[in-house]
Image (cartoon, rainbow, N blue to C red; front, side):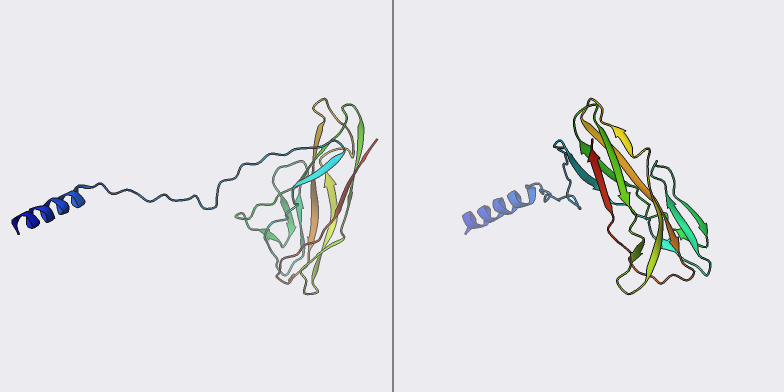
Length: 170
């Protein structure tokens, strides 16, 4: 009995003296590694155009996302929510150095919420000339911004639409 008591006491001391090991914890969301691989005569959309989260009012207004970067602006009775920043669209392409490309962006006309409501896209803009020369790196990048007309007392919803972006390699 003494041997059993001594053995139990030794076992208990060993358990108490064992350091606690922390369980591994994964990052949320998971970390990502990214790479863009361009093949000549290609065009890749890297970021969508996002006009942000907009609060309408009894007065119509506009939201402008500059293609050249910088802060978005509003007019009239619309307010942008700062916690959901606007994003200009970003594209990348590849081709032969010193060749020309012509970029064309087609305005979708409206963004719709799927419930019969829409907002008007007054314009889509490029961050420079639509005619570009591919440099020695063989890659080129461009951004698209736009101007959105928000109606007075615009119904809530997630408004979206596709638009066409094409590049003609000369």
